[in-house]
Length: 308
Image: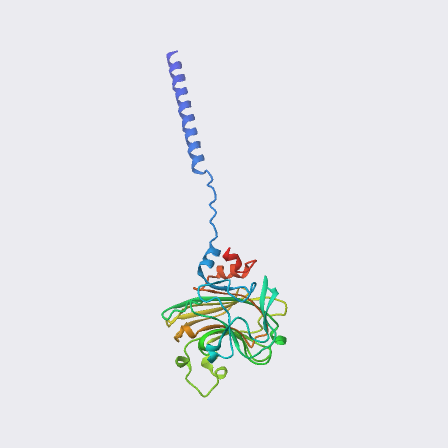
């Protein structure tokens, strides 16, 4: 009888101990595999774009820039050599503000080519650096190059202190149909120009510096986004790339030629030989990432979205 009681007593203890172990393991297992709350990271792309912005004009409320680190005024001048006769505002024949034809509001409307130039000043609006120059340029165009443009080369934008072939950043349409669209990031002329007897567009050295786009996707009534990235200019290892509607169309590396500016003479010229609409010009102080370019292209209300 004593043996039975003893066995029974040990059996109870064993069952209790086993129950404790199973419970402990289950509890530990539950804690170990307890689902963690998802951590949603805030997308800071728009903030990064805003922090990099140095210049922006929407043409919604006139020609003054909506945001600028430098002079916000648009200027008109009869020739590049006559800078002293520049007038504040838009005074070029055939160019006007359209209040309702823009991407989201107003835009610059070029109805015919005429003498003179319009520009914004480069100083502080574009962060030129003689040691290492980085940046990005964004704008929108609306035209049919085949039917709208007059014969000859056309530069929707050209940024330089001298000319298109001397320390300059620009895009152009070639002079005849079917027109190519090209990006030029061209260093000091005295650095690259070896044969002065041949015109630039017949000079292989010049042509090899361009990024051409055959059959570019422009159409009347359709807005097309143009984006220029550049970095490390003036280091001997410069790079540049061209995007259209957020898609990379070409790139160039190993830009060795220097870009020497007299900054006070440098300007952001708009619409050289251009006929069509232009809108949403913005400039940044660094080259942008692919994600930032995509976000910029997709902004529902343009760069205004970044300034809110």
